[in-house]
Length: 187
Image 1 (cartoon, helix red, strand yellow):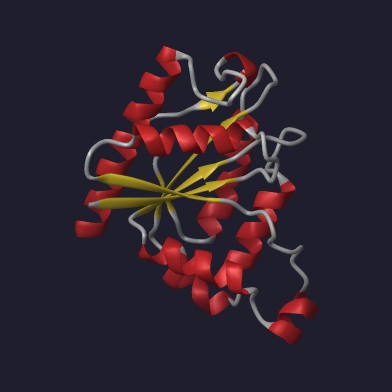
Image 2: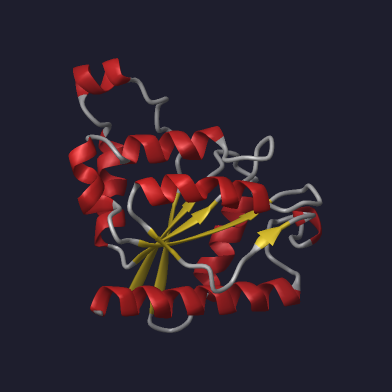
């Protein structure tokens, strides 16, 4: 069994990225589980807060899930041609304290996908994530890409993924990434 930890990078209830993560979980092949996680409720990173109260329990729980998983699926929106602040904030908390970076992120297979109503997709955000992933020592998977532009046309009113070509691409991406992530863990 391969377990992929999926994190939706938007806090909106009707987020296309949350919907894309749900679709990825449903399209995962037999033997692969995509766990859906959100970032709502993670406070803004504040060193004083960390010093006074430590890392928030929700962050520690997510760190444990990432560390136990075979790979990480970041489903990232694109804000102002770059990474979204809420998801970057969550990753900043997840890297605290620095001694936990090795346990949580080092060598972890990761793939970034995303959706946006804009026409350009999330190419720039996915590219902007690369220095962060490199700094954390993660192993990005580049064999397939998915940066969905015009997301409103791919989902119905209930945010179900209805575009058959996109469903097929997403299913192939999840299967390919899961196979690679599983090999990295066993190899």
